[in-house]
Figure 1 (cartoon, rainbow, N blue to C red):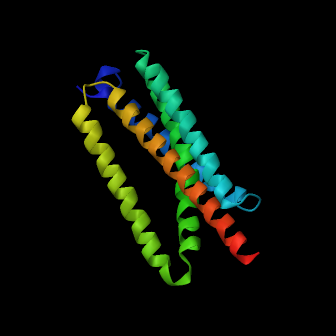
Figure 2: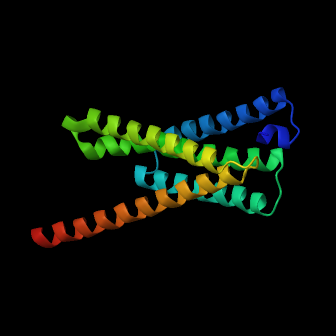
Length: 171
């Protein structure tokens, strides 16, 4: 039994609801274009990550409390997609800037491969733990968000240390 059947939602209504999630992603991506004029990429990435963390909470808390409702799921997924719009629009730009002129294509390919691998791995985990509820989906999403936050904070910490070491060598 799929989530749509558990929620007793007609396929047309479910398709429309998931279409709204795509619109949230598009709004997040388009909003980044406007924000990028005023805010640097690392802050936009941080904002996108924070939005994704909030979406994980908005999905995990009700689902683990036993509340499986179409509006709860779609609301949390919309917030998640909005945050991912920030990350997917800004992340490649930051990665290619960090790679420099000669390595932009390699950075782009690596980032695309990582995104596909994460999607495949996430789908594998959701499928493996699927029990007919939304619990595996929100658990895997929350886990990936947590791993992403740890990686982001660790890389920021490493960059800060390297920057301090470079400043000490020049002074």
